[in-house]
Length: 179
Figure 1 (tube, rainbow, N blue to C red):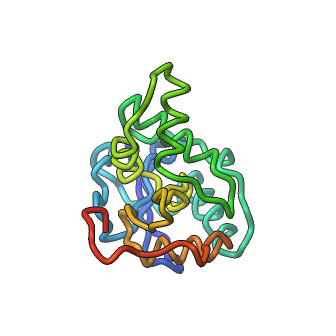
Figure 2: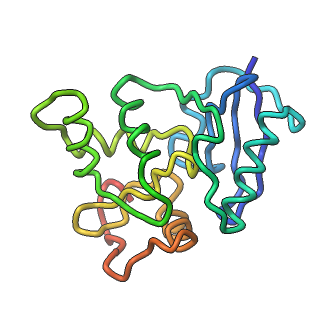
């Protein structure tokens, strides 16, 4: 069985999905790819202890604390490649950013490949099924562009500001496929 609850956050309504013991999804309502990795039919259960724990994590995060990602057992559904990218996202420190290219280099190094496509990494980052907790908002373009956030650029900016990671060197492109 799979369960869901909602959470009212500063970036809008979030939907959380879980099994009995693992967080499987956290989407911003209306985001691109909303629920595309949902494990199946979700039964609303606002009182499931695990979902209460996830909402508590979000309460602390939005209150300015830095709860550890490892506090929550997670089981996002995705290919081995996507799992590798999401694991690397969890290693980006609170208040820091990295680029799609740096993640591509790290995935290549960990898998023994000579190189990895930044665009492939961008696809995996964009399909991250556990937004905010798996911090895909901390990934930017090599030139400082704030592209590629399924929840919308304004929400990415809000999360980076919240963490003190927004730099005056970052910018929002006026056009592009990742907006």
